[in-house]
Image (cartoon, rainbow, N blue to C red; front, side):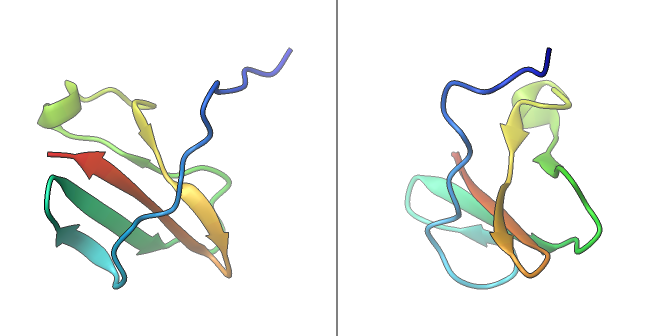
Length: 68
């Protein structure tokens, strides 16, 4: 049985590629055209491999906002 998230990831609120520091969050957007899943991982989430999934925007673009 596949696991499903209660709240699917939402696309980033800021435009642009990479890490974009905003008011109260950091938006992440990357190009990963062959990926089936993408996550933001770091010491801020204790290196949780699936803690912050990115939303698939199409055309290989993935993004999300992470609260700062």
